[in-house]
Length: 317
Length: 308
Image 1 (cartoon, each protein chain N blue to C red):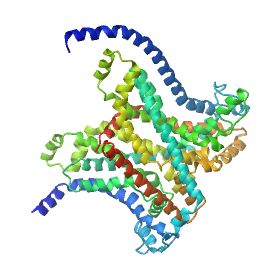
Image 2: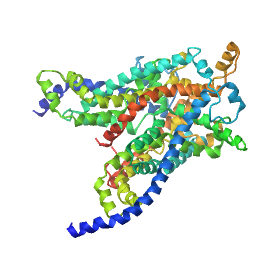
Image 3: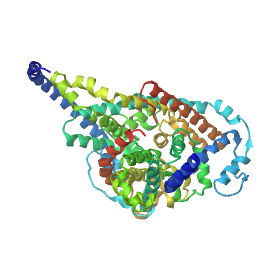
Image 4: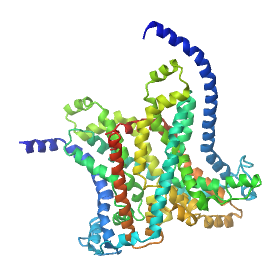
């Protein structure tokens, strides 16, 4: 009886399955079929391996991987012993931590400042300006950064005008991480304020009126009304960025770094990219690196989700 | 609250309000000063970009500070539009953005509409299927090999298909559809229209504002994409503008272009000025759609805050 009703329900919804089919195929092709490719990290990759199951696209990919020779944990052993991988691993953690340390409070502070602007048009003007860089690609932003900071760029022109010496900012390992944090904040801080301003808009205005009657000054309104109103949003975003600590900003770094700063700027993602396309190793090795990263990333996200639940903020998803 | 208390409450603020106000004015001035400074920091690189792109070769090689333009010189722009390389890249980017956004909206809207139906059997299975992709991925090389196997090398499709679904946008859209009352679909259902027809004729017209926002988000993604083109396109004729920009600005591959033009025209060009002109040209389309995005994006984010 129950079976029949389920079948009927499915038939009733047949058009919805048609609507869902393209998205289903998209995830299958661009997410799940690649996941099968993780098997390559336990095999020996060879280009042009004959396929085990025919030459239809996708099946060919799977068939080729099936025919590759098993090598066990060889590539993970190699990864474990490579100092350049661990350098990339450490850089990823350091750069992410710096970005959280400085980049996480930045939009909160900016949102608190914007919240104090009572003039609506002015407030909208500020927001419009600050948010704009978010919509530009890192290629373009890096172009601007190079324009401003290169040897013949604006900053050096300024320094020379005031009688100083030219400095090479973009190839200085001491400055590079600061540059990453700074440009990340420049590009993203305005966008980051939106969610906090939305949370602030949800605070009951009567709270402020009551506080004004009690003679509270602006600072204590911020501390006792505005901050409590956005605190849960902030905590969730903080936990989320801790869960994403292995994604230190691939687009940004790939477009800004150079061989002179690899020691401080090479992250796991740029390492995988270079080891695959620029100084190619066996692709099985880079698949192993990618898999290693995915697993840790997954565990971190689970931990973040659990953390959010423990703190009473509900799951992240 | 008794009347007496009310009276007292009204009395006290008057004196403290005066204090409050003078302290407040100082705070206001400080806040606006900080915010204005941030406006300058945000805008300045763009100003510098414009000044440099319009500076003459002589002004740039002199190497001193250029904060106020000494001359307006169009030669960098004339150069980048003198052969069809950059105009072609520009047209490619526009075409990819338009087609890609169309495809992405079709896939996203359809899936979101289906997923908004709480009665759909298997809905939760699909959710899990979708959410797993946010937590876990096969990594760069497996994806690369799959796309290569699909024949994406040197194909325009590589700029369109892989960006055609964004899970975050899909969830935003699904959340929006769930807020629509079921009653709007019922009359059409009685008329015998099927669910796909109902979606196009009734639901989409109502959802048009939010769909415009989504379309703009997708369009920005398409316009800014350089990563898949960089991996898969080897023929410069097929480059989108962002990849060209990367070649010129980041990989500094412009000396041959400049040398050839200098020989042809008998005049010099500054690579710095040409780079900035290229950046300016790539910024313009974003600048044109930005007011529309800006108007709607807060709404989009707010919808995202509603958890599924």
